Length: 535
Image (cartoon, rainbow, N blue to C red; front, side, top):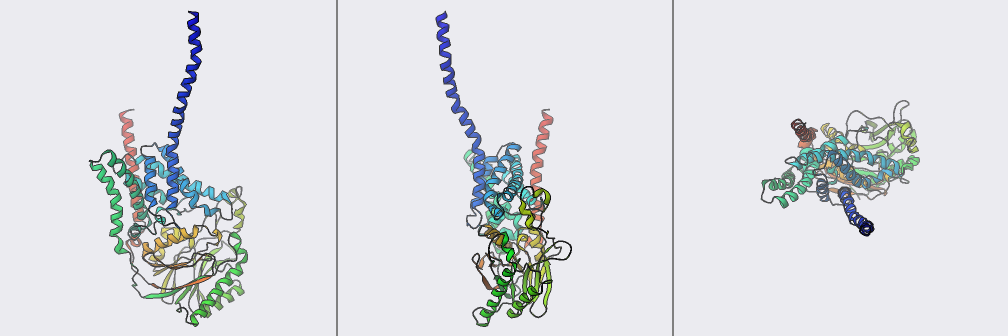
């Protein structure tokens, strides 16, 4: 008996060790399984980033969202939020890295974290509606609803990174003329979520109607985009105008380029004088009007006689109305980021104050708190204040609408300018702060979307590149190189007809937000009924 007990006791340690050896791979496999979805979500975010300019890989966006849909299907709300957050990090960390230029990683990481938390809300919502019939439609509407939220909050919103802004070369682009950027984003999202649903249902239920409906969510946005192509036109409705875009360049990139404000002003004046010589020599046609970029004169010409004299000489020499980007510093109150219409005979005759002021760039919310994390807030010693009215300049008979730099990311800023009578859209910008990053290409893609959305030529004068002339169909006629003084002269069509997107305004976005609310409300109602049935 004792020998038997001894043999059993001796055998127990070896059995325990063997059990542990067997269990270890199981634990490792479970942990690996738990990491698959987060890893795929982050990878899908990176894939979405790669679909954005300067890469012409717009078709990656639906694939990225198809992967996200696979991660989110059937997940609980908390898991959906976490997966959406990881997707946002994979997407926005590389997309917005230009925000760290000159100020280090803290502002970049703070912005990306905040925006990724909002994308986490999209993941939460998509997870909740993922089991509903027609899930791709609900999911795409939820995505657009969160984009609408990002465009408005916090601190006035941050629209950078909308799905629509990566589609300047894509098949869905004509939809911008139908329902603006919200409808364009919805089409891309619907196609992506539809791809996943079609693949899943076709594999599991090849003969079912559900598979056909899932496939339809891919075909429908593509078909709608093809049907909308007649709305995209670059025909001249009110004649044409010859426009000149000046890029004077800056002494150096980064936040300190403004330390040589007079040199920046002189660069733009000198390039305008050179253009006048080229016109006189017959090398280029004489423009009807000239556009300088934002911040081309950060010296207030209304208070500084030397700046006034330099600008006035350049405008008189070229002999046509010129829009000048300046910073006005009144004795009291905030600064003004202002475009000045300068007549060659009368001098300054009209102004437009930028309405969308960039938080943490042109104004510092919660200054004392933010200073705890970065002393760079003190670079902005005095906040800028917003204008109130859209600006449309009468430039030699052409109505040119001013949409200053950051404003191009906001639907209402561009739309209100066109509704105020703009036949051409001008987007004077200053990208010198962000060096040679992808920022300028991302912004140029937005400008191309706006051209199609409102069927207007878009002229983009930038201090250091990339300046461009864009036709109403979104094609780039000419563009400059980065950090090169240059002038673009081109004949562009004048148009006054309004697209459905211009006329409808925010209504398509509101409708899609209601669709998202309907889907989430359906999920909530089902859960309440289930709880009543099983208290």
